[in-house]
Image (cartoon, rainbow, N blue to C red):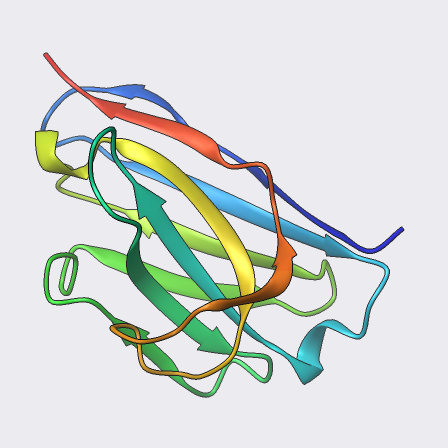
Length: 123
């Protein structure tokens, strides 16, 4: 079955950390670019980060640069998003998807994405 499955969300205090996982199955993982998006209630979807299937190319939005790190484990077919120094404005549903380009500001899902995982940053 071709799918992406996110996990790792939860409730964390401001300044805390979480690591999200995006597990792929059913397709040749390293031929694709994978992006992380987030969407908060009442707000538009926002591109957060992306990584090329080889892991050699990564990009971040200005809002998370320096705090989030994207990485991948090709053997496990999993992309990770390590989120540090979390802020209340990071609260959103995060989901991963195969994307059509490697510019975080303009990338769009190409049709394969997960169900999302909720991240809540609150004291």
